Length: 225
Length: 78
Image (cartoon, rainbow over all chains, first blue to last red; front, side, top):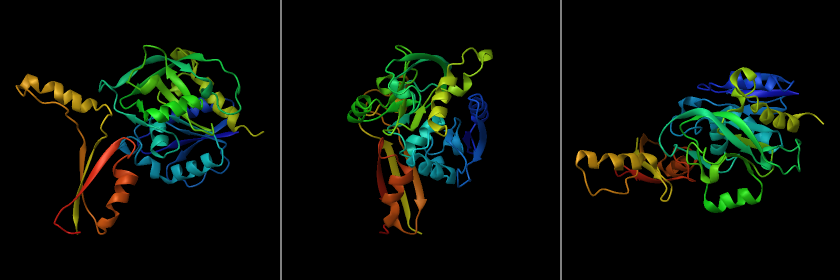
């Protein structure tokens, strides 16, 4: 299996994402934003950073890149896609995920280790499907525009469909996200995005390896049957 | 070339922390009695086909889920 990690001008977490992908035992390569096709790629990561300087709105310009058009087709055909931080913002702007990410409620950029609750929706298609337990993950978050927002009726729908993938643990919501939502997935279940950074939590050296779970779930969805 | 100005602001009901921060700063400067401050942005541009401004706003300049926009055509050119 092979991962593709997108790289825009202004991306900054693509190297850590690449390393995390490789730790799932798969191959991984960077996909430059001008590339048009994802041939030979089984799972995609849209990484964190500040794509195209985040001008206008975070993710607004990146969504029109050739690579993102290819990701749109890849996702439509059921390919697994993981968006992290800026990647989550890009996927929302591209309408591949519901909602939007707004300026943090307190206007501060937050950078700290937080606890995430992995909801059943956090496991993509193949991984532990049907398992209805939640799990606590320790993962760093670092962002200034991470307040998840969607209209109330959309939030209700996300909850009812099991599309809430990750929540901030009680009392740890750093940005004012609606219903403590830190990550969501699409209705089909093959596209997931979250604000915290699992790629920075894959080595005991940095305190937690909980982030690997997130990559492994996506890898399981992308592995050839 | 016809000129246009697009005003973009957060939708009513969505918390606008920038507006709140400005609102909280005003009394310290002696500006009392000001509320509901909303901070948005202005995009000025020149456009061959002003008829496409709506599409342009929907697709790129604004995120219609979270923002309202108003198009103002300058020079009186339709």
